[in-house]
Each structure stands twice: as structure tokens, then as C-alpha cells.
Image: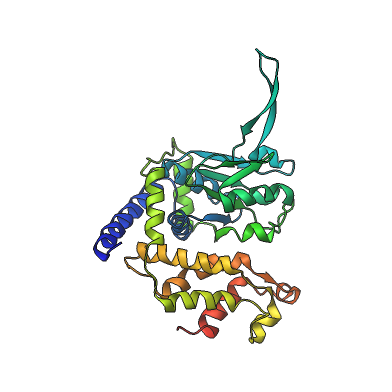
Length: 331
């Protein structure tokens, strides 16, 4: 794609982004940063995990975004008794009324939609959580030896209550690694909470106009991936990811506090997210600052800390800020 065409496409993407934000603001009060990263996930073609206490509009964000995208949408409420077949679907025994012959027919589960809201995903057992692994990575589901493709585009937007709460399970590391972002959703400000109460205690029917289509979203995702990137930005993303691994680090702070660093998928997501962030910021190529801007939501859920770090209250965010500010030089 030549530069002139890229500029036209990028301008159209930014205009669409502003329209989406304006439409969602009619339903969602505040939460500017979580909404921004949801948009980056959309244009980057990745999944997102929203983490926060109950009642901060995590579910409303996802359902409203699905309306704005004009895509099919299914909500799956994760509970301790949910089974993988309840998500993926199952083979059902059928009988031909004319011949009496028996055969199995696949009945699709709720996973077969463009946008999946996995609500309170950490309330289901790890066995059920892992049912999403193939769908999130391969965009398909394998049942009884048959592979069934999922609609395109396909997004899993999961919500999670804080892990300290009773009745929750930690997500498997392999599944966490498939989320492009872990987005923290906090409490609203006093003024925002007043507006929320004002809206929701009156006659209020939140609806968002559909502004996109499946074909348009796929086109925008290709636009993001076609964005040129300088070698020094690729090198920075790779070095930032590698610097989280204590096996390769000479930094005592990393070796003492990180048990396992991030894998290669993290650097891939860093670069894709940086491209999307740059386009939405009015740039035509990402730079190191774009990588730094999206680094914490992209990396924090992929790291496993040592017992010492957890006991001392050291967070992944602190470790990543240490790397960004002190250890990884701009190349």
C-alpha cells in the first residue's frame, strides 16, 4: 500500500474511531482507557480480558461494543457447573424418519458468534476455561474429529472478578497468553458515578447504532497489519519481551521477582497493538513510544512472579515500569 492510500485509509479509521467512542459514550460513562484498549483489540484482531470488581460496566462495555460493530453476539455466563460442551456444542444422535438410519449431527454451541462475552470467566473450572483455547488461537472448534470454522472476525471479550474473591479459579497460563490485553476497569469518579445513577434510575434504554460490518472490520485489521514498522521498533519490542525472562536477564530485580517471563506471542501482540495505537494517534508508522504506551496491558498478565515478589506486594506493573524506565534502552 502506497503512502497516499495509507493516509486516506488511516484518516477513515480515525474518523470511525471517534464515531465509535461518541456512540459508546451515550451508554458508558467514563472508562476512557478501557474503551480505548478495547478498540485497539478490535482493530488489532485480538482478544481482551477485562478485570475489575462487580458493577463497573464490564459487561455493558462488551455488549454495547458488539451492537456498535453490527456483529453477532453471544453471552456465556461462566459458572462452576459449566461444561465444555455447553460452550462448544455437541454431537446429537438423530434418526432419519424415512429410513430409520441413525446418525450424529453437530449442534453448535454459543461459541459460534462474532463476539463472545465470556462473563466472569474465572468462575468456571480450568477444564471449562481451556475449552476456549482452540477457538481463541485457531478460530475453529474440533468436535468428534471434525473441525468447524468460527465466524470471522472472532473476538473473545472476557470479564474477570479479582482473583481474591471467593469462588474463583486462576486462568491457565496458556489461555492468558492468548489475550492481547488485560484491561483493568476501576471504579468511576464521583461525578461519573452521579451521572451513572442519574441515567440508570430514570427511563433509560441503552442502544448503540451499528456503525460497522464484518467485512469492514476485516478490512481495518488488514490495514493495521500493512502498516510499515522500522527495524529499531521491532528490535525494541523483542528486547522488551525478552528482558522479562529471568533466565536471560542480568538484572537482579528481574531474577529475584520473576519466575517466568513472557513468550514470543507477547512481542507479536506488542507490535500489532503499537501499530493500531499509532494509527489512532495520527501516525503512519509506530515508534518506540507507541510500544511503551501499550506495553503494560499487553504484558502484565503473561508474567509469573516469584513467591518473594508476591509476598512483598511487587506487581507485574512495577516490574514492567522498571524495565521501560531503566533497563531497556531505546535502540
